[in-house]
Amino acid sequence: MERTFIAIKPDGVQRKLVAEIIGRFEQKGFKLVGLKLMKVSKELAEQHYGVHKERPFFPGLVEFIISSPVVAIVLEGDGVVAAGRKIIGATNPLNSEPGTIRGDYGASIGRNLIHGSDAIETAQSEIAMWFKEEELVTWEPTMTKWIYE
Ligand code: DAT
Ligand code: MG
Image 1 (cartoon, rainbow, N blue to C red):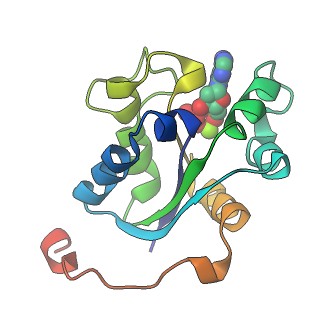
Image 2 (image 1 turned 180 degrees about the vertical axis):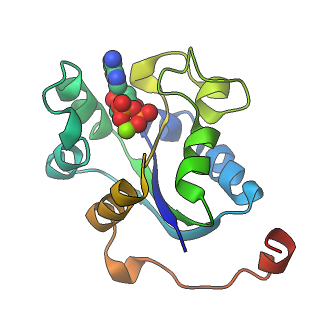
């Protein structure tokens, strides 16, 4: 089954949007398989945002992500990577559709509340970066038969 990595960034945690954000993915029908509140090390932050290391916003991005706790999440479900990105919305909240997390709660690109993996391969490497195998939980939600045919 497909998995994605989601992180509620420091702004989402500080603004007390954790329950609201996790709720959107739960209500959609995706399954939580990993969940933890954590302070991010500089090493992990630099690794996570490694593709952006030449960009001018990289130092600020790393400093921001380590500045306050984040909630790291792994979700499972058919098509969860692409659907997760749709639920999150466009990178710049000023362009995100209303009804998306960034569209409903964000007002600037540097405080866009949440990260979501952009492809299945990225998701696999991000999950391995953020979670130990034993932190991921195998379970069967009783609701599955009401969500999948
Ligand atoms: P996304 O988080 O939608 O995958 P991304 O991978 O292109 O977007 O960029 C990672 C994060 O970096 C993004 O969530 C916010 C920040 N960022 C991206 N472009 C930026 C810019 N032009 N100015 C400031 N921050 C930016
Ligand atoms: Mg990205």
